[in-house]
Amino acid sequence: MKERLRAGIPDYILSLIDVLANAHHRGYAVGGCVRDLLLGRVPDDFDMTASAHPEALIEIFTGAGYKVIPTGLAHGTVTVLAEGHPVEITTHRTDGSYTDSRHPDAVTFTESVEDDLARRDFTVNAMAYHPEIGLIDPFGGQRDLADGIIRAVGEPCQRFGEDALRILRCFRFAAKLGFEIEEHTLQGTAALAARLRDIAVERILAELCKLLEAPGAVRALLAMDRAGVLPYVLPDTVPDRALIEALDALPSEAELRLAALLSRTGTAAAEALCRRLHASNAFIKQVGGYLAALAAPLPTDAYTARRFLCHHFGQEEGGLALHRALNGKDVAEALALVRQVRRDRTAVELRRLALNGRELQEQVGVPPAETGKLLLYLQDQVWREPACNRRETLISLARQYLQKENNRV
Ligand code: ATP
Ligand code: MG
Image (cartoon, rainbow, N blue to C red; front, top):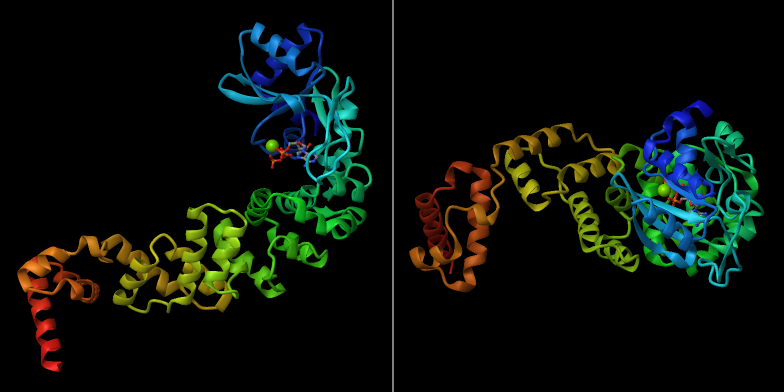
């Protein structure tokens, strides 16, 4: 395992460690990158912790020719640009008391890397590595990695009480790594679940999305359900076991999986919940769009496939996946039809009709109030027979339509 560590630390991080060593300080790779390297995974990024105070970090790295951004001086963090990679370097610190379940009231800088590791959330995230000293692992992180266990550093209730977001991080890492949650840690999540009320909704949504996209999402959500954590994440609409288990049959896209979890609540309520979690408009639109596609009938021929594609463009494949995962429908034929009309480009949108509203009014004499309805009629005709999408044909179809309407009156 340890050879993987040495081989996996990129040169730009080793150079930063050297720069610190020349200034008589120690810098370590820390947290997620050490965990991921030990697991043989490629880390998303490399974070460091160092013995130097933030002002000293700025001076040392600026002096060595690096660009340094003071991203979080109060918490001891600076970002150093190393060969184009932004590397967060945080002074070893202990966190003071917490009054809001989220932010330490004060942080204290310390000389000891072990003290810094003690403030971290889980044993597997509380390891540091230095190329000459080796792995620093005071809480048995390596053992828990080998055993597949998420375990809080220290007393779980105290740690979740300090920062309730750790409750969701616990399930998220279990989902991401496919790990079990150690019994006391799990009990801690149940005991402190209500503290999630203190956490900003944006952070809750961000954790939820990462969890939903992780390979072990179903098991983690079931564990959250048993621990009583779900109501603090999805208030009013706690999904049942069958809905949660259906996620395994869906692609791992957060919006799609969230749509599945909220599928019994109705589109409006689902969108309202996303809004309460301060999701972006694009996110809300995607979730609502998936639920609309789920509510629509499955396409059975080219015409209905064109209509489906037009009405649910961007959510067409996810929508079909929902039909399959939640309603047990065989969607193979529908999917083939939808892909075919997408390739043919025969699912003509209104703006691609060969005749626009103004032309309809001028050429056929349609009153403005009737124009929208008539355009939709023409579009429907084009979906039935794409060859109709020619100006002359549409004009004559429009005339026939008006004639019929007049005869009816
Ligand atoms: P990911 O691969 O998802 O980024 P990560 O472990 O790098 O995983 P980050 O959120 O980037 O997670 O945090 C970096 C490190 O900082 C963690 O590994 C952990 O040591 C520490 N950490 C982050 N958030 C907390 C927290 N809320 N409480 C305690 N320690 C934390
Ligand atoms: Mg990270």
